[in-house]
Image 1 (cartoon, rainbow, N blue to C red):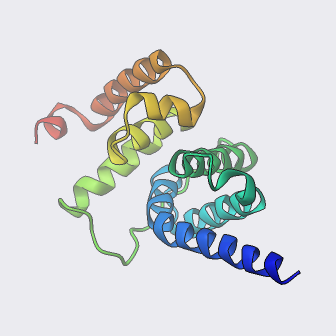
Image 2: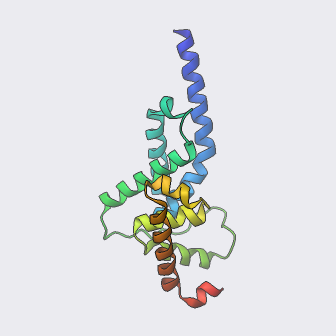
Image 3: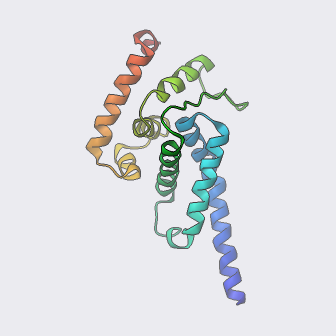
Length: 170
């Protein structure tokens, strides 16, 4: 029994280290998808709970970064379908360090991103904010590479239309 406790402690320590390393990235991705820091925190916690349940199975064999992003995005998609299409969250910017660039630019980008369908938002966030490859985004979202390329192109065109040519040039 003592060996079992030691293994469980090591497993929990590995999980804790993963959570500490992955939480900021997942919270940022969740925020970009929902624009609400409290909901982003809830979605991040939901991701960690789901991962903890299967941690013994995935910790050595899975790409944990890709797996965590997929679990998070599934939680975002589930939350969106429950919330309904009529509600739009427009939260104020958090009292956190402002990303590079001016605040107005970031607010405009987040609002424009909110006009996209949720799957397109996921593609744009993963591809351009998280700087993931097309192949990695396709794997996370369980779609083909061509779907990612096509939807990314359409989403960027829509963002350009929403933001206007003057915004794109600046």
